[in-house]
Image (tube, rainbow, N blue to C red):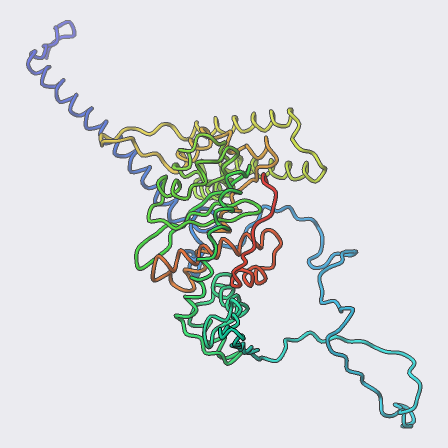
Length: 488
């Protein structure tokens, strides 16, 4: 046995070199395994987040929730008031009119006490009740007879017919207006509109005739749509959104551009910048464009952008609910909601902007929350694959909130800017309702006609015009024109 003082045998240089090579290989494999582990952790987070998504915490439609619908959730602060009509409120009810269309007098025949005859008894009072009902189902058929008269010079002259009398038997403008109203405004399928007209009025109307009526109304909207596009180009706050629509079995895109007073739809085979330019509205804007953050909207650099915070709140709820380590998401949702409440309170008091100190406080809190999010969302590690490394949903949302903070908080800086993009989302929702009920359109011409008439009806409603009255004017070839001031 060697003594303590005996020198230790040294490994040969060749063996040391081999060990170093093996150590380097092990370290390389360890780095590769660590990278793969991080990628798997990120993928697991994405899958868990996707599994926990629903219409309340993401942009998924309510129809995707199935039977396991999440319980209703609201950020409204309870007022403490009981449900229903509040004391002192006028409320809404069916009120009597000053002059009824028909008057029926009811006279008592005999006394309730002694049974005496009351035919000649004096009237001491009247109790009035009014019944509102629909008139009897009937159709008014107007016959137009055009006379021919011969002049003393021998020439025979025939009187002209009114514009609605286009054939020996034809449908009038009021019926045509009701057809457009049922199809475009109420989203009733064409076959059922034909059944309704037959059941209610005994009028035989084919589905082809109904399609032609909507097409005819669309053809008369050229000047209206040109004027509508001009109004939107001059509007200071414009909302934009898009949604898919099945036309002839293929996917098309409906682009909706709207304001508080106008709504315009455009059908295209493209979703991005090419379709937006074809609509010929967004490229002319110089105010504020409100949207959901889809990147092609960023191509329009002559406008200020405002992002929909309803989308942000849903995403923040999804992250804070599915990830316990993402507490910053809960704080950011609370900050955005509290800021909007503060803006609404200021508007109620007639204030046009928040106090500079309040804005500084909001921005400071915003920055603090972003910094807290960075601590739990480090930059993504490259996996060796080509392209940018994939971030988690939390990191992607955090990055978006960081880069576009001015667009997100624009509603606090400028009270004209809304908190969300609901104006445009309500417009595209009607397209989804139409597709869900009727299953899309068979032809591009039919879809485009429906959208053109929908632009007319939606704009009329926004400006306080009765949609049926507007459609009667349209079918009578005298379309109503928007007459609201610019810059709404």
